[in-house]
Image (cartoon, rainbow, N blue to C red; front, top):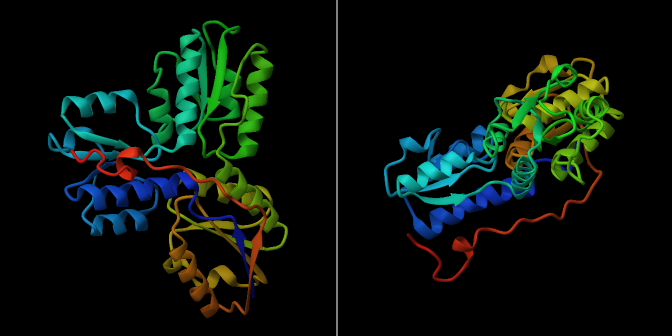
Length: 313
């Protein structure tokens, strides 16, 4: 059995930044340190940080007054910041800069009095945070069916934006419907699908041409990891989302000659190393890394973590 590892895979720049913020805050400020929501959607990474003493909560109200809190990479609605200030919390915002871009678009479109159609999964934390920038102006569309049925108060004043971790092909189809129904609709000059999401999906499409089974390593909570599974299946290749090497079993590889492996943008590379070792036990005799794109994107850390004598409150 031949195994092909897609590249790029795993951590994107936004995830690397979020984790570096948590580690940097630990080093600079020490404990206690709270994080609202999983800083990235990967159980293994969250558990690693918990072992260092980081406390994860789902609501700002759970954090003792005067403590320090990091807000997750997925973005938070404005009321989180308001409540944090009211509780005298020291806030470090680890939101991905690409999510910040979408938040800015929503605020801009709302200032123009437009109805904003947000394409995404309405219960995903990123979408909740984005909609929170202009809740009275924003409606969420999850599918082509939603796009066909949505009603707006003024069809001539409509805008759209998207969750950053969606399927590129699905978004394209939904946006085509919106543009047909609302010819005056405006949207971002450049797609809101993040570069890493698109690169990983493109790599899986190539992987699908060379394999007859694809494994995506990631957590069920990870939107981009789930989209990679969908991309592989749409290309006609059986694909499974697995959390780690322990999810592998002999029955997966019956009749399989070539296996493709990739991972979501919040999956640590160490899990892939264990996958490779495990695959050898299931008959893998050769390995290859297939590179489709070079990623050089890096995001800077907040000044309070990089400046000498920075804020230590």
